Length: 486
Image 1: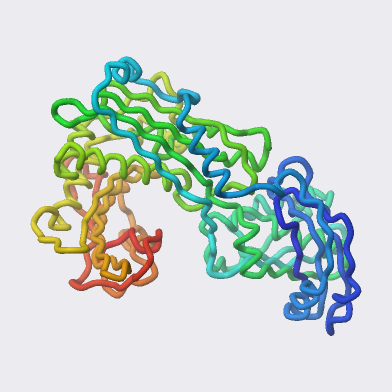
Image 2: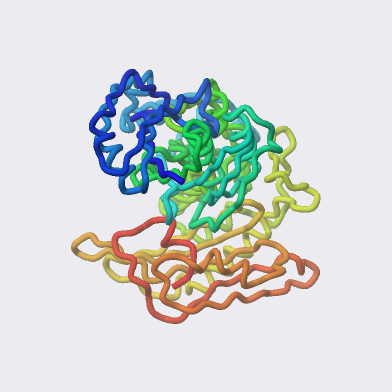
């Protein structure tokens, strides 16, 4: 067996013009260098291309790779700049876009004038940053490929490896190892395909190891997104109309570079399914061309859509001079089942008859988390604040209250988070609570309590409650720090 490290193109779609490997071959333990062809058309799960250094061990491969001298043709993405792209997305969101859901006549309300509130929200590209960088071992022998890889998607491994090697899927065997963290990144088997291609070219088993830098730079990122919100408030402080636009490079762009609009499967994730009882609502989606590989990361589009809607809701509550919890419940309205007639709502592939969108369940988790967090019953001094958000993601209803402290030096501490979720029938409470509570920085024991609500016995919110005290998470307001109670 030999080891490989691949020098990839600096940007997506880049190609090798020429390379000099003389110095790389002088490194002790380096055997050879092998070109990997760039992907054709859309990247999909194909290798991105580059030059692989083959060596006796990983260290030698890494050192030899540093000695490579490569001249690149970076193509049209060479000029991609995150700041400019952010401005481009925001400008798109401030202009009329494609309507994906409409109720009433929001425009007629806006033209009447009056005080209108607007908000812009932006979420950057997000890398998976799994605990262990990508790795795969492949052996191509007698026209068949045997692979060992930490993958979330062995079926996709079979598919891409068979295509890259020109063999049948039956000729590809994938042994799934321990994952080491995946979060969606290891469902994309480009790194496994690299190992397979190199094994066929070298004629020996090859283990490909990515560095942490490779893992971050050549990720399939969760999309960058820009959201624009607009609403006038009536006499009671409630919106009389609501407009929201979301602009993000869509996931299908990895399979078709001409795809620029979000598809229903991702627009449903916290955008077209806004649960508020509003007389006039218009939801839009704008075009955005992808310049990097975009794909799934945990809750996917719910990440940025929930952020925008819940922030705007809280800001409107303050503008109306109302308590955020009361305001949120007022917007959700009376318990009802949302009717999506006239729009596309895939419901995460589940039957709407079995899994309807029930606002009463969202109300219940909101009310329960407010109660358990002591909302309105505790004093918050200088530099402290508390906020609430409620959302439905992948058929589960979730509400969270977060308490935040900021000291005079600007450092952030999160002393307490309360979360209540309703995932339906909970067969295994420990397995359900574990993903929520098992995160960095937690210093408490937890209990998950099931509550039965009579005829709605399948709707059992889980309350995550911990011991008193706090877990220090200074300077970090990340996903790792907001989904459980401390």
